[in-house]
Amino acid sequence: MYGMIARIKAQPGKRSELAAILLEGTGIMPGCLNYVVAEDMADPDTLVITEAWDSKQSHDNSLKLPAVQAAMTKGRPLIAGFEKIAETMPLGGVGLPRG
Image (cartoon, rainbow, N blue to C red; front, side, top):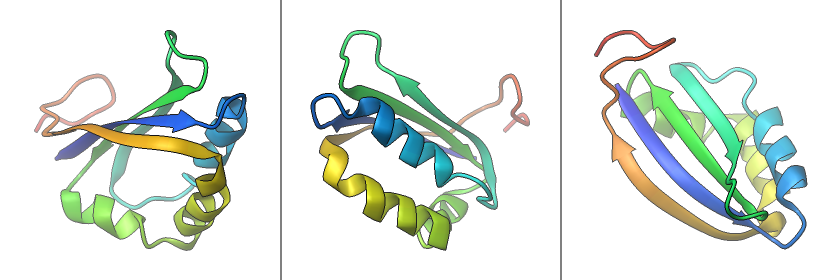
């Protein structure tokens, strides 16, 4: 398995709009086991994205999907900053197969 945790800083006051765009681009992503868009409780302009995939290749392939490309294009003007916090190897958990 492959996982990633990222922090996305939205332009001031645009967090909800950016979250909606990120969520609409997640319909069908082959190999995606878990994709969570969450509001950072300490920062009103920040989102935290947590992902789990069956492989890094599936994650990389998802970035080429038309729906994901469209969401990235639509959301890019709303992003003030992006930080990849960690790449992980999920071992299992609620809703995930054991690694």
